[in-house]
Length: 474
Image (cartoon, rainbow, N blue to C red; front, side):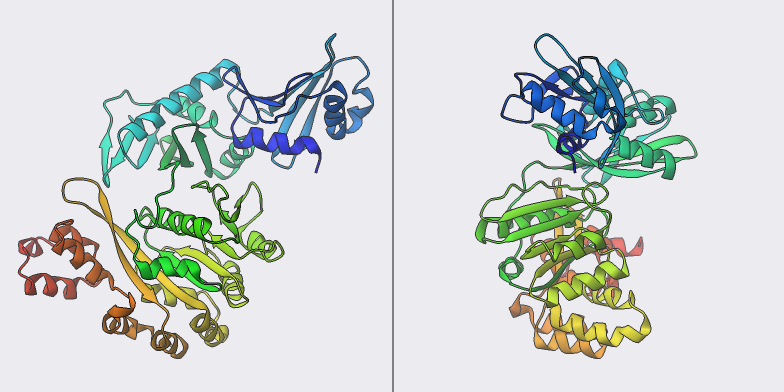
């Protein structure tokens, strides 16, 4: 890798307009006309010429010859245009992202990015979780789980395309043009990070931006039980956090990683798509890798992680057979692995993992999983009385009885084991929901709607004399 590639990667990650190298100044990113240094030391003429010459290819002979040089360069993080201009005070180099397709240029890019930034500030100030943008429609915010349309003019399809491309890197613009959708992360310094998705429907461009707070909530602030927090002190095993999209899995995982980061002295590797919560190394050394930017896929990064001296590995999504297989093997061989799935209960999580494998391997996987699984946290978000949302968490912990059921293929008996072993810290989803109802945090109807086993939950509500008049409507 050329030395300049590292600077180019930062430029792409920060969605800067350009990278500037000038004699007597540190390397700097240019964004909307403002410069921000990304190195400490000032550059010399020889350093600038050397950096450019490394990537110049056929043009290398002209670099440093006293005449301006301009060429395209394919860096690992995307196409760029490099311009080297000699001057009386020394050389000056400017590196800009290649303008793929209908990428936004010059002042238009800054104006479009300013408009997007304004919408994202509105999203944060409104304490909403998501911003939905659709061609021909006004912006829509998700507040406390409900979609609310803003009193703003509709955004024309062409304008929305321009807005979205202004906050994409060349790689994402190319992927969006070829595949029709793309995912990325975007940050407004001092405000928040955002998980972004762009796509198209029959009306044109569409996008969703989700707020990722810049500060990580602690495990205690999240209300995670002592038994769940104790999973962070294991030296090996698999811990799975599950739930539907938007149930707060990423926030819970971030709290667990933060707890490890503050209390252990280990190497944490996170593999995400995209990186959401940013963890600064505290007691631990934290390495965060983004699929598509720093590595090709989850399975490639997970395989590579085993050669990077890890103690704890977080896999953002166990989305395919090979990734799940490597995660289980990694958990067996002396590493603590955290992963996510989109299942709704602890028992269904075990079944989903096993069912991903061919029938002739499932018996072996049951044995491996029975030995490596340490816990499952299945959560869902409920509307809190008085505003906001609160998580109901089903907790499955590994005890010999649970391991035996997994090994013997009797996962349907797991809920009854959980109920009879509550003293160990295990909680069923219905019990977690009932606790929120009893604590006057959630309405009975809301809890009933979030329950997976509704018949039993309805009976429990009636037995405890809660209002069940809504059952006639359900």
